[in-house]
Amino acid sequence: MTSHRDGAQLAVISHRFEAIVRRMSNTLARSGRSGVLNTARDFSCCILTAEGSVLMTGQSPPIHVMGGPDLQAQAMRQFYPSVKAGDAFLHNSPYHGNTHAADHSILVPVVDSHGRHRFTVLAKAHQADCGNSVPTTYMASARDIYEEGALIFPVVQVQQDYTDREDILRMCEMRIRVPEQWRGDYLAVIGSARIGERALLQLGEEIGWDSLDEFAAAWLDYSEARMAATIRALPAGGAITSTCHDPFPHVPEGVSIQASVTVRPEDGIIEVDLCDNPDCVPSGLNLSEASSRTAALIGIFNSIDPTIPHNQGSFRRVRVHLRENCVVGIPRHPASCSVATTNLANRVGNLVQRAMAEIGEGIGMAEVGSGMSPAEAVVSGIDRRAGKQAFVNQIFTGTNGGAGGPATDGWLTMDDLGSGGTLLLDSVEIDELKQPIIIHKRQIAPDSEGAGRHRGAPGIDVEYGPHEGELEAIYANDGSVNPMMGARGGHAGARSAQFKRERSGTLVGLDICGPVRIADGERIVARTSGGGGYGAPETRDREAVADDVREGWISIARAIDIYRVAIDATGAVDHVATDVLRAQATTSGKNQL
Image (cartoon, rainbow, N blue to C red; front, side, top):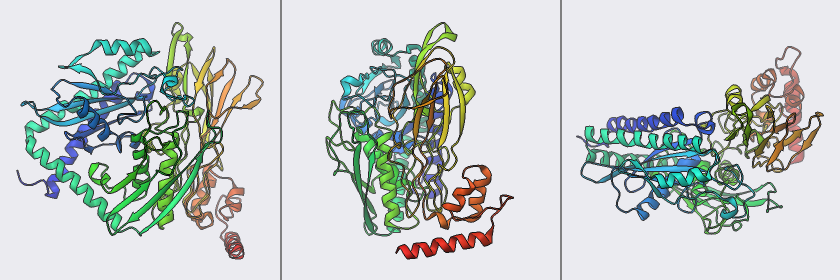
């Protein structure tokens, strides 16, 4: 076979690998038991080399697959230097390369007929329940891993010779509140990994293992070359950006962090320094090493050419500096990392892409909406429709708004930076079938977008309550105090909010974190975060402003006051009045200077 450095061959085989990841993902989506998997699709699949380099990630939430699978594979090699066909390992330890305890990963070494370890497949699935001391996989208030209570599996063998280690599974079933649901999800993840293993074994027999090794090396080199060329075309410079996570349990002042980003085109390198940040906090906010690295990488990849492959080759060109015992660095046991994939991870990635926007026009982004509002709560209780059976599941009834960028408006269903728009918004009907809840409202929140030349996406208003009896909702919000910032003159998105609607109809404000008990006849009300805008709002295309008014995303008053666009009685742009408004805005800006 000729060299895989031939572009056509490289493309063909890369698509074969991508197809394998897609088969793994389809298996998980179709066979997962809990709604967080088969409805929202909060899972990821990827292929790594035998040495542990991320090779192919497919369409997965980026927080899962960009900066952590290689660390997980290294841990597997450390604990199991010799692997055999039929082995499978359960890994969810945030201290050994995983994101957080709620993400159960299955690693399967792909071993050829001669006993040589050739590749590793990884399937990662967020759990509806992972044994925490309260019914949620996001325990924001946990002061350490002991209070969190999650079962931790630092590369534990769960299959040998393709047979389950039943003792491990019994441990899970004794601690997890919905054991049958968990067992179904476990089988889905194992099945996904085995599908990937089988497909790679077939590909190796078809093409030849040495040829696949050549491809892997060439694919990583190609990706690195693409990344280096892109960076060399960027403006040189640096920026330091800062932000503050909202006040949280055990951190009443919030958590202030910063990121220093430096672009070195002459070297084809981007550096992100997160070392100058606070130590770990007595809260579930601490980022795992995987989440810290990944959040920084997401911010970089959101800021540049989106066609560059996300693998270890392109990652080589981004240097992320972390320190131990840092809230956005490398945690030390027993610091809790329960919400390591969301809140502060979103803040870190947002800082990085906003810094890139400061370094040069046409790159970077504003900030993506952040926080897990009650619209994405883990709900639990007793389902009286099913013979008083316990239920636990995370619902995705409303997403945060995406950020405006140099070329496009924010993505409405972005959800958050770590999800990257890959998670699906739940079907109202399916949520009401799976849990005893009624969703009374889900709609776009007008005037909640971050205004800009390219606006951020608006937040979403959600209202739901129990079908009968009561339910508990546990969430870990952010952005209620410190909103998502704009970039290059763009405005911040609207703040998130959370309330309880009492039986009388009165709205009562809720804390930024659950748990909240919602009794029969009561409802929980959520407003998700709007995304930040990119560029000055008064430079936005006036027809785009009129479209937003017609769609009900912004009001006529906001079009006039913020975008300086006049709309007539028919909903069309009044160009003469708009010229006057925008001339006044320009004059006002000059006077301020």
